[in-house]
Structure formats: structure tokens, C-alpha cells
Image (cartoon, rainbow, N blue to C red; front, side, top):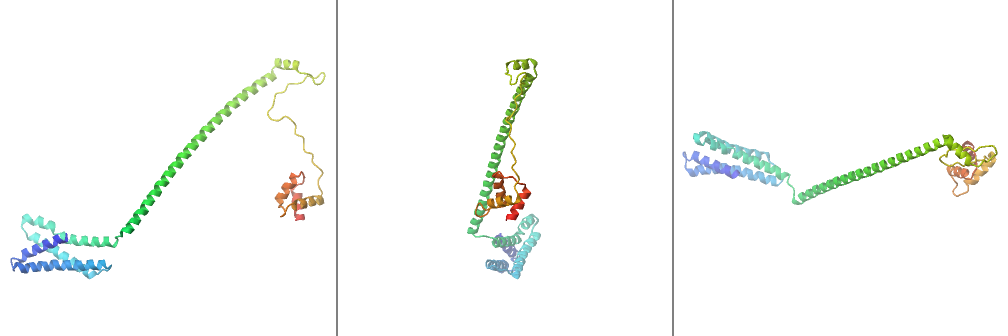
Length: 274
């Protein structure tokens, strides 16, 4: 775009000045305009390559671009009506070329080396891989949890069904036993076939019950220990192992051995001994 702008500017200057002076002189004037623009552009690029910037050089470059654009616009306005539109269509090329050089300079400031680009691409690919693995793991965990909940629900439903059926059967059985017990004919029949344990006493047929029927004998509470005996016993249990037992361990062994004492007396004995 810069080359096309220079060619157009040179052609317009030669056409303008060619009528008033020799074409060679007009060509030198046009080349001077284009040369000044190209020189400022080259110097600006050199500074940019060194990481430097010069505001005066940039201003001069924009002045040369504006001058070239002015030349083209003026020529377009003075040209014939048929060619005005065509010349106006290309009059923006010098400024556009200068703007593109500015954009290219900004791009160079942010340009990265191939190694850096490869490292960035690797990091992005690694992040995508980790995200994909995480999504797959979440989907798998969700499917596993759904399967587990379904299995637990189905097992619970089967257990509830079995319990309900068992309860129904037991209720019917106990209802039948209750009717048999309350029935007069059944009672007489059972009485007639049951041996009498005591003369003149008719044994009564009882309904079976759940659980053990053997009576549990009450634990006989031994005589209460005196404070001195309780202290001696606590001291023996406490020093039965090395290191000495803690209160919780001593109390557990005290009661496991079958001794009886209230928590208040046992703790008081522990404090006296310890």
C-alpha cells in the first residue's frame, strides 16, 4: 500500500508540474516528496527495532502522509468529472498505509518467540486435557452414584415388602391363636388332654409369647464397702499395671470385677488414693 501511494503521488506531481516545468524537474520534486516519506518511515522502523521511539520522527512521517493525501485529494477535485470518483477512491491510501505501519509496530511490540508460543500452546492443551478428564470423572461419579442409589432403593423396597408380608403372616397367625384360646370348644379339648399338675386344679393353656420366658434372677447386691476397703481396692487396681491406670480404666476394671460402689464414692476414693 505504501508503494502504490508513492507511485500515485509521483504521477500526480509529475502531471501537475509537467506543464509548468520540465518533466525531469517535476519527477525530482515527486521523488523528493516520496523519498522524505520513505526516509522518515525507515528511520521510525529502525528506532522501533531498537526498542526506541521518537515523537518528532512520527510527526514528520504523518506530515508527509497527510501531504501525499492532500495532493491526491486536490488532484481528484481538479480532475474531470468522469475521473473524480476514481481519484478520490485512491486518495486515502497514504494515510491508510501509515496507519497500517502503526498497527504493525504495535504487533511487533507484543510478538512472541516460537518457543514462547509453543509453551503457551502446551499450557492451553494441558488445561483442556485436565478439564476433559475432570468432566469425565464427574460424569462417571454421577453415573456410579445414580446406580448405587437405584440399587439401594430397590433393596430397601424389597426389604420393606418382605417385612410387610412377614408382619401380615404373623398377624394372621396370632389372630388364629387368639381365636383358638378364646374358643370354648378348643379350651375344653385342651383341658381334656392336659395332665393335671395339682389335684382339682385345671391347668390353663396360655398363648405363646415372643422372646425368652426364663425368669432372670436378680443380682444379689453385696455388702457396701467401707471407705478404707474401697480405697485399698482402688489403689490395687490403679497400680496393677505400669504406668498406673487412669480413672476411667480403673473404674471399668473395678466394675468388671463385680464390685459395687456409687460413682461419687468411687471418685472420692480415687482422689484420696491419687
